[in-house]
Image (tube, rainbow, N blue to C red; front, side, top):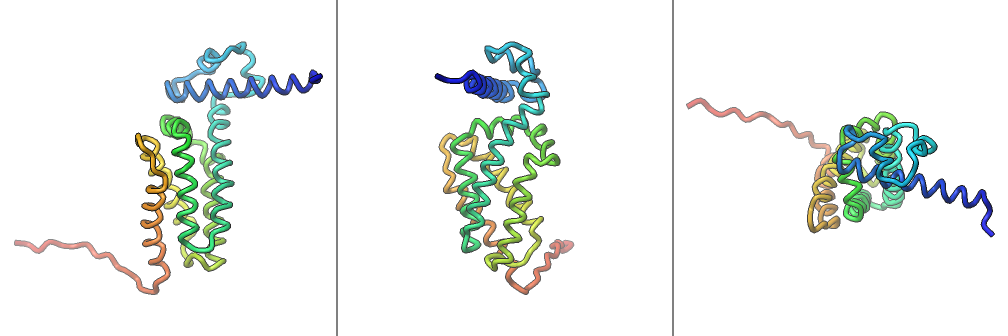
Length: 213
């Protein structure tokens, strides 16, 4: 016979999941700024006061939705990058894993894009920052292991993350999603740029001046 404690815990998990599912739907439909806690609760069968047993604010809802995804993906990317034996494996493996997640759950990505300002506000508090910090640490590790030339890890982390974020935006909106093609494109683009740091040659870009007629 199931204990009262076990049943209570099961109900708590079910209630929390119901609130998160409702929040995901209304944030996507109406936008984070326009949604109220009452809007979220209306999409559930729960009493209005139940919300505060699980979340304190609307921001807590968005954080919970994004955080679980980001932390899970970050752990997978760290595993892929840590096991990489070459620069190609480091870049391609991570992009393929990330773009595959986008293709598998485009609704979540649409939610993040629909509420981009609110999501970006979480960077400083670590929700998204965890991913970029982990990437920077993995780049520094790759440099130490000799599979990547010495370069500015913070700049490269920002470039890799930014390109992946924006390409993910495009990929999530495509009717036919091809994460392998997206990963191949990003890998070819970045490998060409990163390999330039292995050369001692310094390239100077001078503006072209059109001769006066």
